[in-house]
Every structure is written in structure tokens, then in C-alpha cells.
Image (tube, rainbow, N blue to C red; front, side, top):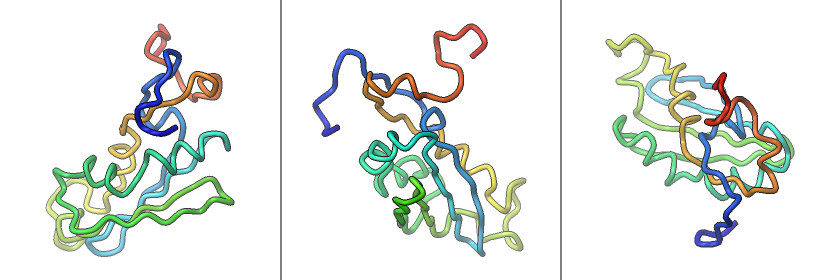
Length: 131
């Protein structure tokens, strides 16, 4: 859905409602996969979860480069973020030197979901008493 074409029934939700993720590392590089919960969410991922959006989400980690690799047959994408692990496992003094929790940061990215796809959202919504 192109920017500016928002309908009344659209919902803005965290990315984790339309996708799940996994994180890996190699040196000072984080590798984050994003996989759609439903095939109909794939076009939304491609449109909204861009290199620029991910760079903004990780701005406080100061990545020197963000590269997106699309895997359309899997309804997935992989992001490689350079220089976000405080030097990597052997150099970092933080509690998550492997960066395993970084997928959760990415999965908090707001995405706009058209009303017609709301039925496919995963997890509890904001109006859910258990959410």
C-alpha cells in the first residue's frame, strides 16, 4: 500500500504481529531474519521493512551499514547490520554480546496493516484483555 493511501480500517501494529524473527552474529555483524506469519503479509514486509526503516530502528546502535536480502519463496527477508555488537563477542562488555535480543528490537517496528488483513494478525491486540 503506497504511503498516503491509508484507510479507516487499517491498523498500525508492531512488526511481531505480522512476522517472527531470528538473530545470529559473526564478529561485529548482526544477522536478523524476518519471516511473515502469513503469506499475505509478505508484500507489507517488502514495502515497509526496508533498509532505511531498519537503520532508523537501530539508530542508537549506530550501524555503519544495513543490507536487506529478500527471500520471496520463504516470505522472509534477512538483514545484515554492520558494527552493532560493540565489537563482537570477544570485545563487547554488554550482557548480550551475541546480539540475540536484537530481533526483538526489530520486531517492535511499527507497520501498517490493511483492514482486510487484520484477521491474520498474530498474538493479542491492544484491545485484548489478555494482551
